[in-house]
Length: 304
Image (tube, rainbow, N blue to C red; front, side, top):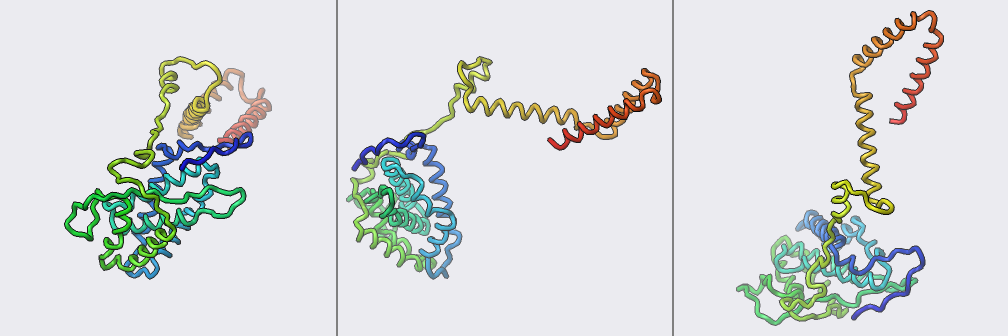
């Protein structure tokens, strides 16, 4: 079910469009964050863990995941955001993943779904169901305990407890069964046709791939000046070039060895004093000039 457009935002308020959450700008970092979460849980879980879901909750909170529910407020954007995040967690529940990561991904999917704010002012959009594919084709594996990687997501979730039959995974199995039962009781699954028909929209993530605009770089390289006001990228590049030039000047001025610089100064001063007739006639003037130079050098040194 599509979400009706929200009223126009107040002037100056920025709203992320739904297409952003299906683009590579969001999907790639979100996948990396989810992978980091599951990897951290896999490292901290041990066969002696008495409360596997409590461990997941502690990691979830430590990584700042509770704030994800307050990332987007616009209804249409929030619908796309939740849909994509749940789908990214679902990717790790598939049969090709290690059983422990599959269980952690199910915990994450359940937590995202069940922690949606039900009461807020103004009210926030909440996803009513989780989209899962369901197929009736027979599994290709010989063992009923080994999920077929070609199965659909609903079957992968349904058969997940059977994949946790190893000795060190048995403590987590009751928690997975409990999460399954809670999702079924809440009628949380929106059943779609089998995965091979590609019923999900978009068909693949990311749908939009963001690439760097090469037009400005090409124009600069060819020496053509763009019309109009400089863009933010051009201003940043100009500032960086100025900083590099300043660093080069500083290295030229201060990069010499102190003894070499002092020797050059003494030679130049001696030649100058010989030209004006010695120190006696210009002693006061030279003292003032030296003091002024020292003061300016101290000021420059303090700014570097």
